[in-house]
Length: 129
Image 1 (cartoon, rainbow, N blue to C red):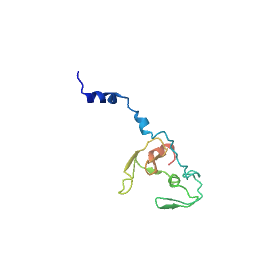
Image 2 (image 1 turned 180 degrees about the vertical axis):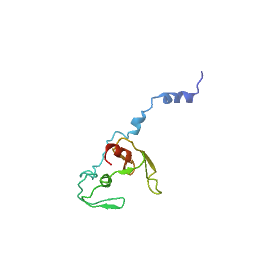
Image 3 (image 1 turned 120 degrees about the vertical axis):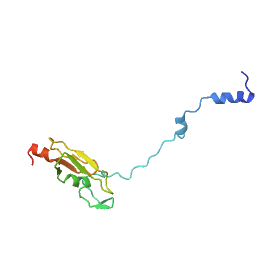
Image 4 (image 1 turned 90 degrees about the vertical axis):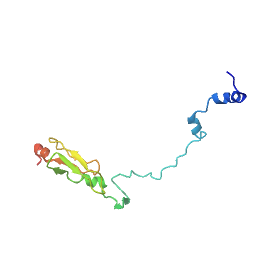
């Protein structure tokens, strides 16, 4: 097989081992310096707040319960059948169909709103209604 002189000169460069891609992208081995977080206080979701927090335009005063705590303080919604329907408004979350157990009086929570539902049959069987 005959090769031209230009191919003979370029062949060693073509078959030379290339630098590994990970090393080429690493940026010369300089360590990444991460600045310290300005949030070194207590966790944002802690119960005891020292200053007001504004979430989604609603101002929660210091010491007031979080939105999830206020939802959990509500009684479960009693449903006649075994299927609870929640949501589905024009600006709300999608309509959710929640299947309830006929013999379990434990409330089932909606994954979007956190509202809890229980069937009337389960409460009658447990003697709570």
